[in-house]
Length: 339
Image (tube, rainbow, N blue to C red; front, top):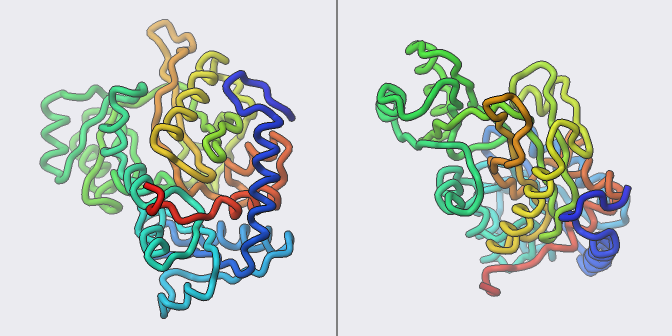
């Protein structure tokens, strides 16, 4: 389907870019897919890597899978481009991007600085605080600090407790009552995945995501978990979840604003490649739909499995999976030298 929102990329603009980057990808004769890693998202990364590998092989590329970390880092020098499929720590946080910059191997995904920024939820919140609407938030580096925030009534119930430096919705809890045992359990669960955590306002409206390719908003997709209150790890990878394009429970005005915000963030921070920005709505006092989207996070290396959201958005705009993966490969480049 073609463009349906004013702030989406124009059909010709988007499809022309896809074709251009597909052609650029053909200049890479020996490609590696970096997958696996050492984070809690390793298994999801392996699935993403396998899906990307199959797509590139179908498109005629010479591709090799590298399960990270390799026994010999120098073996990466055998490739003239790297498709990064690492999620979480060491993959999405700028670490592997920095390594590839040093080895002079063009890679997909934003640069190390941008990756590190958007992996850290607290830093992202601070940088964008005066820029886009966000849920009210606090950061804590210890259980005592977190309890002090809650005991001093700095945030109202219900609230969300989440790891600051993690992905795939791991370690996230919604606290619905002032029960010290349950609150401490939520805090300890979040600390399993990060040395710092966020305590933030719970938004009671629908959740949706915006896909972006090379700073061009593709479209928006509503996420409706059927067996959970939010898009948890189980809802993402195991549960029964509906994905609705275009969003059905969000005002058109709010979607347009989220698309506009997504383009501005990607342009302002030079976010390259294929990324995803997540938003949530908040109902007003009368229970009617709000027209203001709240920014949650930017995913610099979104999933590319059969359940992943970004490929669904690309497909909605008429871009099949193999073409989309090839185009993403075509965005591979060295970036630090251009700063």
